[in-house]
Length: 177
Ligand code: AR6
Image (cartoon, rainbow, N blue to C red; front, side, top):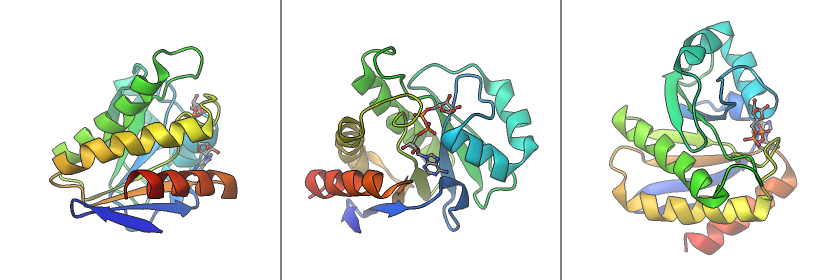
């Protein structure tokens, strides 16, 4: 299911962020040290190989809301954009920090001439951000940014479970109508 707004295709798919063929940059739900972790970060680092951590650790630490970009190493993607989402109930205001992740990631993509970006549901795993709230913030933010994008033509959200997919899909339809 997808929507096209301002000439940019926005879609939700169910899948694994570390196997997104045909996408130029994938986004990592990183930790501050940009090291291998669990969830998305574990999957991305495992698929990318040790070269990714060697490159990313030099850019650490990063703050909540911040994003940095590295090569994709053994991933099928040219770049990895590493975002540190807010820990829910701790890094405040969560909403603003989560929005900054999406904004900063897309800004880096634009700077590197990236045409397609795939995001996981940042902060909704180990960092505890409630899924519905995160989905709302995510698409409200995307909606505001879309008219400003010049290079990015495709934004994909990769959700890991059926429930995550349903919630994000509904928020996409509701927000980008
Ligand atoms: N592909 C797509 N989505 C996934 C995958 C995958 N392979 N694996 C998990 N998810 P999380 P966070 C979903 O915890 O909340 C790490 O340990 C998952 O179900 O990866 O930002 C880091 O090192 C959830 O919906 O990211 C950090 O310390 C979403 O992706 C910390 O966790 C995000 O879950 C970051 O926590």
